[in-house]
Length: 594
Image (tube, rainbow, N blue to C red; front, side, top):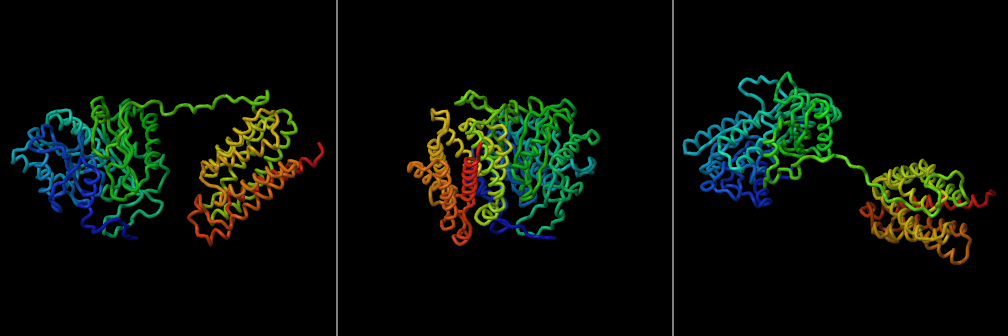
């Protein structure tokens, strides 16, 4: 099947020129030569060829691999980057213009990826520049480890390992080394690095129809960065398996792509190919490091993760491994102003994990240690039945909550609440039920552990605020007045941090009426159980009234009023459910003789 990818572009023929214009507008340290469309050169704004007293580092190639190469122009890295059209080598005249613009008496080093067009065009430009009196050295980078070593005169392709060579050469030049010495360091670095890529899709060229030769459930090993076929097509595997295969291929002693053996120090680069999320790249890095250490016996000194040399919108990644020594690490750690070189990677790693800090020791109102008491007192028995009833009511309401939430939110309210209720029921065997204050705190901890999203954090805030209010009381037994004050404090905290209030179509539209009625009935002299029951009726009425409200908070605020009018707010209905179940459980407990 063939398809034309969607692109945020104007004329497909102008994409490189317009990219360069945007790049230079973004980064004030960059300029470009005024020679569009034939000459497309990005260069350091602080360098003038006639007066520059250090070795100029120049690279380039076809566009479509951004940020390579122009994104690595900057002090301490490239002095200029020559941009060809998409996947096309730059013209000789464009390369010559770049050499003339930045090369001073110290000469220039051309770093060229190993593709026929790049070798020929940069080679011809180098010879022409030499004839004009410029000192020019060239280093060809071929770090591909996917294809068999013997490739005739073609050799291995230049891939993302080239970026590491740029950095090493740029740092050597910035340190004031001669052209011969800079070239020697770059050449040595190019011999120390190996790369292999894995693609989940082909790339789509601007304005062109692209055949999707991979199909669903397939990946291509060793796919080229111009979309050229790789070594093999295989079924998609977990990233663990993919990373293991790629590392073994790069480090294979049979092919001897790189001079890396057990005990070597290495640098790792995980490079996105254009459409791979940062999350997936970090997963690959996190799996690659221990495999290099434990399976291959290597010391991993630096890890670079991100998109360095892409293939337009190709999904996939490449892994580069470079043998490291103190000089290479020093060059990689050296300062640079290149906009796309990653910051914060230099230096030795502290331990990856440190212990989770524990909360301060808690002081309870009773002398009992935290944990379920051997025997429950009256308060503990009431708490037990109320918590069980509330949690079970939520579990039974799961499907209804998901159904309501599917119409006004993201459809997971019931599942989220179900996880919280299940955790409470499982953890209750360890709750200090004779201490109501600490039990409320433990409920919050159970919820926080398993409930994600907004609901989880709001319920945790609810419990923490109630806990703080109850803890402020000096009484050993929690009274109905204490519970009413704790509920009021919880509502205030949820409103403060969640940003909602009455009428916003949220859980508060059940909690606020319940709190109001509870306090009113207690002040009127009703017994606590009756007041609790009446307040639960107010909670249900409040929840059902949300059908008539326009949402002003949460995902429901994006839904039309017609849809909202068909269902109540699921968060409010959840409150009405657990609150009412707890109230009826307390009533029946009081009616049951001991």
